[in-house]
Length: 91
Image (cartoon, rainbow, N blue to C red; front, side):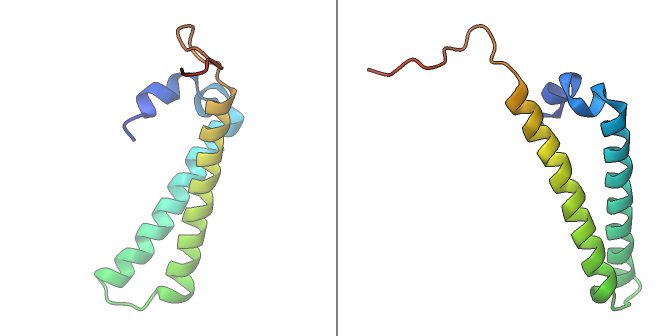
């Protein structure tokens, strides 16, 4: 979370609306589904482990994995800054 201000200005998530908006919508839906199942379990006392909490946890994990994949892809595509020396051997 603390690196998001450095990452987001040049990210694919903000530059491409065809990637960023669906990623945001899927993340919100996954979060809401997971939190709703947790609320039913913790506050209302309903047993929501199978299939509710299990399925929403899988969806939450998959959405976060895809977003992390986009972030990793973006950071691999960035060129290093001018003051970074690449390929120099240490003595």
